[in-house]
Amino acid sequence: MSAKSQFGSKIGLIAATVGSAIGLGNVWRFPAETQANGGAAFLLLYIACVFILGVPVMLAEFSLGRGGRSDAVGVFRRLTPGKAWWIVGAFAILASYLILSYYMVVAGWTAEYLWQSITGNLYEVGAALEQGGDIADADAVFAERMNRYICSDISPLIFTYAVIVINIIVLLGGVQKGIERLSNIMMPLLFVLLLALCAVTLSLPGAGAGLSFFLSPDFSKIDASTVINALGQTFFSLSLGMGILITYSSYYPADTRLTRTSVIVSLMSLLVAVMMGCIIFPAVTTFGLDRHPLEGATLVFVTLPEVFAQLPATDLWSIIFFLLLFVAALTSTVSIAEVSIAFMQDRFRMSRVKACLVVMLPLFVLSAVCSLSFGSLSDVKIIGMTIFDLLDAFTTNVMLPLVSMGVCIYVGWFAPKGLLRDELTNKGTNRSRVISAVLFIIRYAAPLLIAAIMISKFV
Image (cartoon, rainbow, N blue to C red; front, side, top):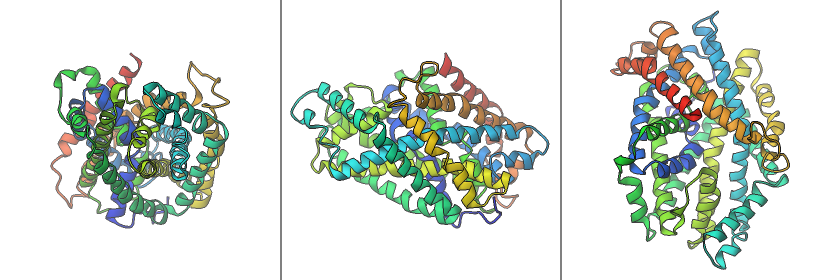
């Protein structure tokens, strides 16, 4: 990474970091977890987890990135030369690249649904539902859409490749002209789209019942599993453990106030999640679609399209939603890819162009395999899972928690003395009242809670 690679403005810095955090975890995972874990009780628990655990772990990654001024491996090598802690960074890079290989496929689905909404073809598939019936018809529509847009070989692959090409174009622009410029456009657009969707769903006749479930807590629903789920959602929605925040913070100017940045990013991520809840729960309650669990892919590719089918200007609302989803997916894929690109530039002294091509071109094969695991490779199973599902489960349940735990243990116990204090106070130029609390959490609380999340996934 060149020393000149820095974000050009504070707004761009915030927009890029928020864009890296906001993704499908906020858009589809949060509503599903909220429905399954007691509505507002889960929401309150999730908010507490974000600020008690998420912000301190984010600050640990920020301190590593800006303190080491390098990629996810290089920061450990610079701060503690000759030690094996760089393995934590290597694990983060591997995890992020594996995630990127299947995340491109999901981004391709959102691009295809957006295109089908623009052309009007998406709702031709729903003719059976319009002719009348019940939830069984919705299931039939879902099956047909799955066959056409996700489980076929050619169409999903074309859109996956299109997303990869868009990522390459953005990433070739570098930190300021590529990532920052994209984020400055996409993040305001995302919030405008969210507000538009909130306006229409909150005006629906069943909006009150949906909001009541979402915003009225039932604390009897909280148990150990609810706490674990809220912790897991915190890590997923803030993109912790993927090397993204380490990489992006290495581009932060020296005067960036890390504590303030972490709070803003966390608040914006929470805001998106809450706005999605205000969109989804009133909509599914109004049209009686809350009888079934709001599972991730089903929610996005089945439930909400059927909500839009009941509204005037169906295609318009469908276009707005899938554009929103595509914006979230694109900012996420760009940030995930940057982790590996920064590594190639730093470790192998590659030019930006060469590093981008070395990282991105293999995805034309790797992402194709993930896409085809829903089609002609669907019978290929490893420990009972498709290739896509295996990568998803292994990275989410094993790799990301291990990286987060490693970062916390390193920053808490083994990093150069005063690293956290120096970074949070900008070498003593600012006051920080949270250093002791942050240090306690990343030394003791965070590793134990992350271990609990990992164990819960297998027990």
